[in-house]
Image (cartoon, rainbow over all chains, first blue to last red; front, side, top):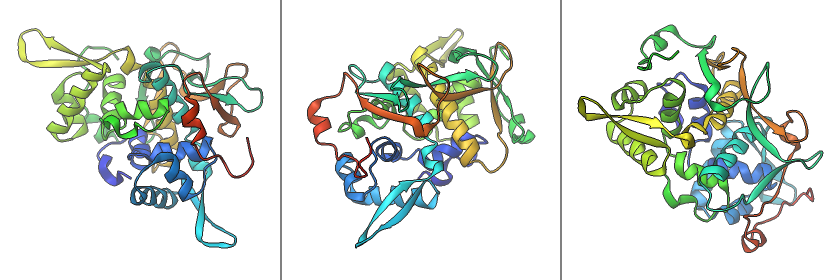
Length: 164
Length: 164
């Protein structure tokens, strides 16, 4: 967990990155969400990370309400780590990052294809407008929302090209 | 940049995180994409990060083809850092992370609302099926794609709950 690293930023993406922006975090959630992994040893086997790093990430996920720790009957020293609704809701961000990697960062063809469990159709995370069909990134603007403090906004350097 | 940290993972999300998963990376792209920031001093002012960290991130973005460095006429020691198509294409992942933060990690109401520049409608990043309307995260499965090495797949621990 990055903790308060981004404290100066009035930004929900910064808040998200404080919880899931640390090394390995999203790959742990990936294995939990899409591979059904729940046990410490299985996460460790698949990811090959140091056990102290994995323990720290799982503990932080539990503290943040992203995972729940559940006892396993008959195995008093083991536990399962299961995503909560909050954790499962990271799926769109993970699908979007994967498709960016497919297009721009992976060496060959896509190693994984996301599917709609209902129909087998391919799943993507696209930007969609509430009034229209999916829209390209270049057509996305921003405006302050109801949670934006005026003083924070006033201190932000504006764009220099005169665009809105 | 995380560099080869995730080298063991056959995963386009891991490849993406190697390029944009380091601290501050996505907040720099955010300011470039949605606030129109291009200059070192403006990034530094808005983010309040150490200049050596910012310099390292911008340099890595240029090396990765996420940004281009452009000279500013009449200012021989300054430069502009401008997103490429590869950089701008991070928008869906950033919008998805922001909405997760709005729902699960931010203290109050959304500080920023993404807009469709064409019509002013709100923009979201939803998971969509090629055959259907937007679908919930719980209905997303995965299958190996054409880029998945068989040996890598064979060594992955399967889910233990019997689900597909």
